[in-house]
Image (cartoon, rainbow, N blue to C red; front, side):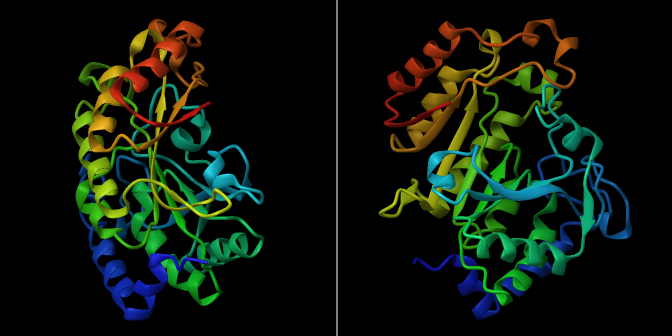
Amino acid sequence: MREPGYIKLYREGELAERIKHAGNLLRQCRLCPRSCGADRLSGEKGYCSCGSKVKVASYGPHFGEESPLVGINGSGTIFLSSCNLLCVFCQNYEISRFAAGDEMDPSLLGSVMARLGRSGCHNINFVSPTHFVPQILEALPFAVEQGLNVPLVYNTGGYDSVETIRLLQGVFDIYMPDLKFWDRDPAERYCNAPDYREAAAAAIREMHRQVGDLETDSAGIAVKGLLVRHLVMPGGAAGTRRAMKFLAEISPDTYVNIMDQYRPCGLAADYPEIARRITPLEYREAIQSALDAGLTRLDKK
């Protein structure tokens, strides 16, 4: 079994340095591109409505992820509360908008990670980790000391800062960002993030620089690399054709999951243009745009 990178960082003392550096980012929070400046260490809440402690909505083996993550025993998924994007159409609206969940100290989160690893999960999959990077790093030594030795997955909405992603080099073996939008107007209208494309593109490039294209073992289980999710939206709101061209420029072997499961959740009913499911034609056109761009590894869900 390939040793995850974070074990080496722990052994060499580098992980402790990363924990210290990440904690400093909470003093005037700049973990994500919003750079809201909240002093979260003193209990001030950031744009994400979170302070100094990590909050977990749920955790357990998950079988609804991409097949290279799920395998036989599932992906050890930890759903973190709240989000730095707060999309109006979020399918996990109660978790993202209302921060449903329970606070955990680092030792407890580390124990949860280790327990999922012992249960046979192929990886530990953090959903919406961006606003809790320091807390995840702080929990990791507790997990390592309890025997954790499976890859970590950074399962993000894509609105990440390069500074934070660089801090994670060697910690996360697998990055799984969304590439939600290519155009400025939809990103601003639905996520209040007009700079989404620029931020996500820079973050995805850095992720690929660190881990490269997706690698799997003899059983087809992901061990390292980049997976990108793209949710097809009504009326072409996601800018799929240009998003696929960008991913192909990074590498034609970029593993891309083109998802058809958009449904109008959360506040989507207030936005008539996205208050419907996508059509079969819209999905077929999205797949064709990926093929036209030269992408060779498509997961169609």
